[in-house]
Length: 54
Image (cartoon, rainbow, N blue to C red; front, side, top):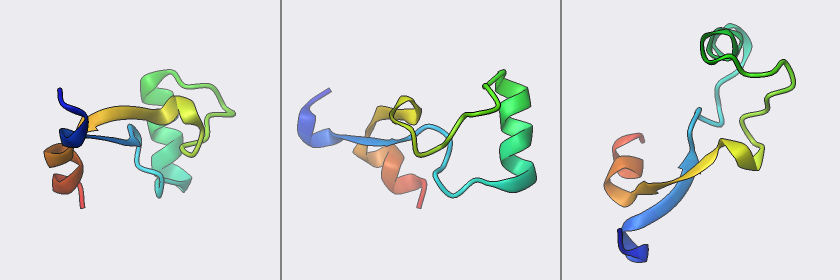
């Protein structure tokens, strides 16, 4: 993947909170202290994938 077609984005959306975040933590076995803003919730994604998430 070329660098100009790749962006860094959140795996679990940065705006997720409350019941939805609790559900995702349980579903994916994430620790209680998981924070969507932490670096381990970031991954390279194609620019088209990121654009489609808006």
